[in-house]
Image (cartoon, rainbow, N blue to C red; front, side, top):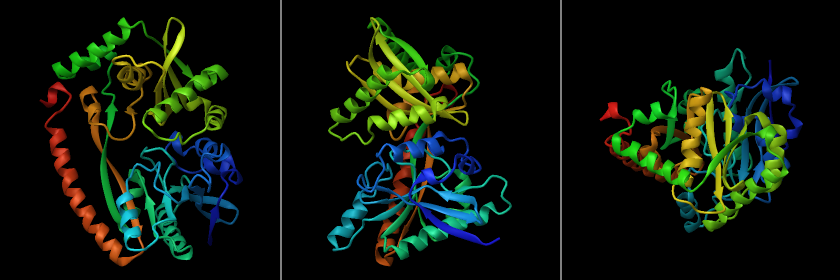
Length: 381
C-alpha cells in the first residue's frame, strides 16, 4: 500500500487509539499523554523554541509510523550539547537555527524515536522511511540539520545504515539484581560506598525527615502546588528559567496518573522536599527534584535512595535517574552508553563535526576506562 508522509503540528489530532498502536516500549515519555501535556500546557510551542513538527506516515487513513519531532530555534532542553556547532555556524556567517530535532523535550531519557505500528510486516522499511522524511524536511525547509537523540536499540540499525554522524555518551542507571530488600542491595556495595550511603540515610533520619509515596491519582491540588514550587526553586537556584509551567503538571496528572510517583519528604507534618518520578515498562525514571530547606543527605535520599527502595519493593528492573553525574556511581548506578545521530547538510561543517566526534569518541572511551576502575560493587573489585 502507498505510504503518505505527513507533518502533524498538533498531537491532539492523533487519536489515543492510533498512538497506542505504535510500539513505544511502554516508555512513559513516549506516551501520548506526556507529549500532549507538553503541547496543551504551552510548554512546547513555537514561542518557546519547540515548534511541534511530528513526522508521520500513513497507509490510507491508518497511522503506521511517527517520529516525535520539533523545529528548534535554540538548543536548550536537549542534553546532547551542540552549542559549539551553533557557534561555529555563527562565526562563519551561517544560520544553525532552525534545526529539526527528534527527541522528547526536556527529557534525557533513552527510548524509541522511530515509532512504528506493532506487528507491521515492514517495520524496518517504516523506520527508514521516517529517516528519509526527516532528511527531506531539512531540504524542503532549508534547515541546517536533523538530530535524533537518545535512541533505543530498536532504532540503531536503521540509523546506523543511514549516512548520519553518530555520537555517544554515558548515563548512570541502577539495575535490580533480584534484591529482596534495600539492605541486601547495600550488602553488595563496596564497604566505603555502603558506609557513605548509610551515613546519608542516618543524617536524614536524625533530622526528623519521613517520606510519603503518592501515586498520581493520590496527589491533590496542594501537593501539586508544592511539587511545582520545588521544581521552580531548583531551576532558580541554578540561575535557570523553569522550562515547564504548572499547567504541564496538571495535564500530566490528568492524562497519566498511573505513571506518576511523587516522593514527599516531610518533617513535623510539613512538606520540605519532593522528587517526582515516572514509571513504565518495568522502569522507574527520576525527573524532578526540589526542596524548601537544605538538609545534609536529603537530595541523595529523596532522588536516589528512595527510588532504589521503590524498585526493590515493587519488582522494577531498572532505575534511570537522569543525565550525567559520576556521583551516582558510588550509589550503585553503573555506566550505560547512550546514542544520538545527526545529519548536517553543509558538507564542510559535516566533515568538521565528524572529525570532532571522532576525537570525542576517544575521550569517551578513556572516560569509560576511568569509570571501570572504580566499580561500586564488591564482586567487581
